[in-house]
Image 1: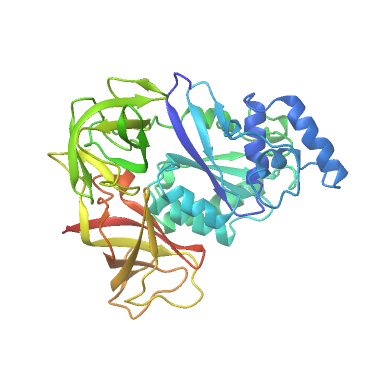
Image 2 (image 1 turned 90 degrees about the horizontal axis):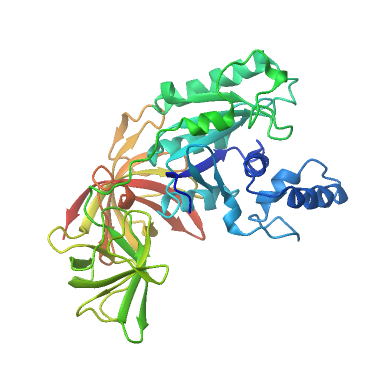
Length: 421
């Protein structure tokens, strides 16, 4: 790990606008992927008659479309700039992207939106921008890609910039915080070095824009919230729950409570990377042992918090959801599976309270009969078994969820208020 502050960076945008190529290029330019690996990919791409796809291939080992090839281990999705140490949350598949983006481990701090200069705003561009806003992404860098395809035309760049700006205003993204950079991921223009091809552009190049992102504030002042991923029994120690601290700190001697299992006790030891530590904080993956808590008392999906400020357990909760894809319509009584932090619980949508205008966020209709793909709404949800979840205004890390059914992510949302049981 580096000493620099860490950021999760989402790379979003429409499917053919060059996300993979950009990610490959960023990793290459920051020295995270060695030259020889790119060379291997170049040869492979040329053999397949896809010359020029070498950077995309670096990332596409993530994608199933890849028939075969060199595997690049996951560590290569990390890169350093002068200011930050970044982990790329890049999921080529739209559905995977959404689920990963929502369920915690890859909660992105900021995002790069890739828009192709020759194509402009496309349907997924809209959807990703809307999701980014719903999920609380801070700042957007808009990479206007494929400038080489439009002969580095300033007019084309300005045109795309206006389209995107309009879109940001529609979904109420603070468009003043957006930075636009004309790039060619394929040729390398304006990524690590300023390009002579865009002499008309005098703003930050991409790596400068990344360096200028605000540093995320680690949520140490919030109460401890630690979703449990697994529970192990380790000889000589006993029961060891394992998970990633989302907010707050964990120290030996703390009195903790696990919800919704409703058991607790005193923390005896905290381990990271097989070494005992005196304190662990947000982003740390820990194993810990709690006096008096046995393996059958707690399970994956429980959340550990302070005994005097335990995680909330919802009888019902109100949420704002965005329906991304559903073959028909969603009505009250629908019971899909909600994925929130490490929990997966079937939940019933008890009522659809308001339909929102996705452009403005204003209420478009009270108590609608149904919602469908593309709609945003406020709904009341009743978990079918106990679920620990928090209002996203209080603990955003535990306030967002993905809704899955039929093997796909059909909606995403954030918790507005929790009616505790």
